[in-house]
Image (spheres, rainbow, N blue to C red):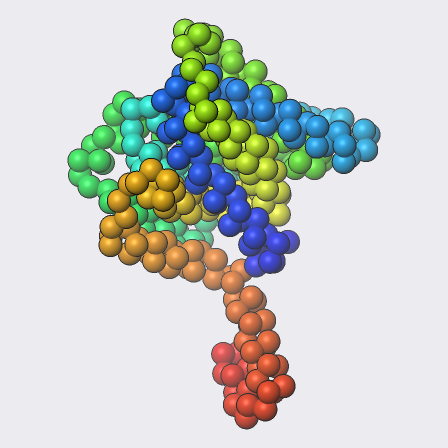
Length: 328
């Protein structure tokens, strides 16, 4: 299916919103819970929710990994696309702002084509796609008002850790696609989440985090519920279905919208400011999406013109045919 299909457009927007809210929820949770422990508990909850869902809705025969591709896809998702990506994000975000974290993760669409070009035979970054990607990245920088000072901050400390998480996510996304698993995206994710949780609990212990250091305040619990159920189980089902449907490069574009959602969430929920530069950046991101998605958006635009023409004829507008054919 193409991204222009209404269902995948809706899924794209939903994933963008759910992942964008991760930055706001993480900021609340990290105030009370060590980072690796927080993200490990997040995926404990996500694994329980999604595991229960697939047990209730799938035939048991469809739940068993049967090929090396199935196992490779589970490991790629559990270790790289979910586990390390989120563990590094939460580790790094403790020492950078949510805006810096958002733009660093917005680099996933830049890294993904680089890995895809080397590991996937059916995905290449076109010149148009490269231009659209760069335009969108400029818009993301405008949204968080990137300055020389914040740019320097991204090159050291926690920002470098967040950047490593973005690289891990891009690599994992491509490796899933390369593995060509036969399991459905939902079942594959249900297997991957406990792998991620186990990995992160191990890293939490290895780095000296203490369960006793966690304070389970109402805001921390609310953060875990959002991160585990909505930005965890639900978002990853939709994201990996997008990956299977439209490919690694296009599915990674959700991370261009996430900083917009994170900025709006900070403005609405945390009282952060929303400047004219931020609003202008939203517009630039839309332009970047238009450039990248032109091949997929063109059929949708044609259908829209056809429907407008039909509506015009039904209501007696004499110029309806010219509306229909002028753009073809």
